Length: 354
Image 1: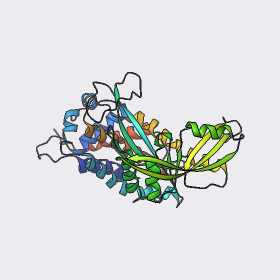
Image 2: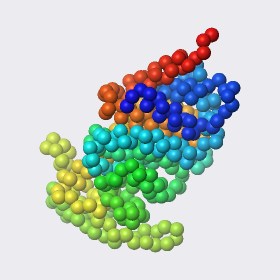
Image 3: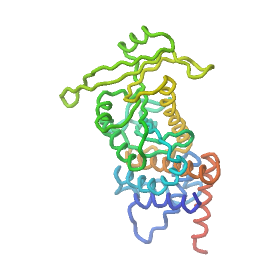
């Protein structure tokens, strides 16, 4: 991915979201990208970035979002994804990929209020958090974020999952969908079966499952099919669930033995295939740890601003992954520094002489 493709993607993302202002505005898109990328580099507030490098303040940057909403930001992200995904597809070499879902917590410091700040406290000192549901391609070392949606308090997470899945399927035909134990939801199983996709969910070890595990021998695999009931909107439904139990399995000789319980509609040849499929999902945890190092800080309670920042950082991550695969390997931090210098040079070239 050439340098001009990177700066064009970032500018087009802002162009699709920011409201149009008069020609007398002292700032161009390059100025806004420069401020945002510098804030990413230093994991800082945009106002501090303004003091450090000049350019628009945080208030000026986010005032351009006054006509934006979730749909507009999501659409802008997918517009850029349509441009860069074919580059990523080359790396896959027609291999099937897994899609992993996860919910990430973004800490909030301040007085909790409204429908978007959740009471959970993911890190010490915070008073709550914003939540984002994310879908990513996980294929060996190749990982790409295909979308993210904000999660409101009391939101129907199943509907959000299906919305992201529908969008992602315009790019990729997944081999399997992977979920951790936070998604062990009977309605989700029924809906996934309804759209005819393969899935594997790590299921919580409830009392009935623990009893089954106690009757098994170390290394044994057992399949159990149960008809389960769930309620939705004051109506009752049933879903047939196939569970796979694996007792005391050690994937590697020096590894730790675990008891696994999966809800899945796939059949694997051996127990290690079930574990290996799920282990692909672990790669998404690495993605979020990396993203934590490039977050733009803000104290805003505005959910649109929070979502914009989240998607901007996801876009930076995607551009980095493709750049490393097609051009040269470098750390995410060095990539961000590289982009900051690109926009600094562009601004200096475009700046009129005194």
